[in-house]
Image (tube, rainbow, N blue to C red):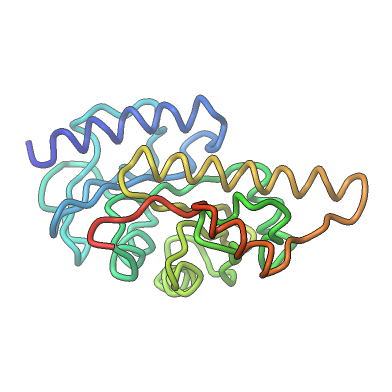
Length: 214
């Protein structure tokens, strides 16, 4: 079986995504890239129900190389992110607070220095219908410049990482930051950190985990 270890890891992280509530039902998708091949969660399948045989393996054009299930509807977005970044893993969520920010903001204000773990101020990609090349282009723009995460207007969030565990952790950080902002807005106007304050925090070593060959 091609990418056997990676497909098993997709199943493990898929279960954790459901357990932590960053996806609901059959929403969300994940993938892992190794060379010119990508193992990706199948379309319309609940992540906690995946077995290692379920995720299809595709090439970088999106053609199925191995597997009987249809690749995720968000395959164009995954492939665009792989083309834009050096990431070997992607996690796409529909987490609650991420969706709230994505429906109301053009970026996630940096009210906590943990935004540096995601590469800086998180952008909200312009809206496009899910699964379309237009959405893939918009998300690719939002991920440019070394970002580890982005939000998608009126949709959800996406995170990359040095491996699938790291991508999942970045997705959790994104949801935590969104949750802090939403809660802060309920009691007052949140204070955003300045560029200088973020720079000083970065100088103390707070930065994303390096991607391969980065």
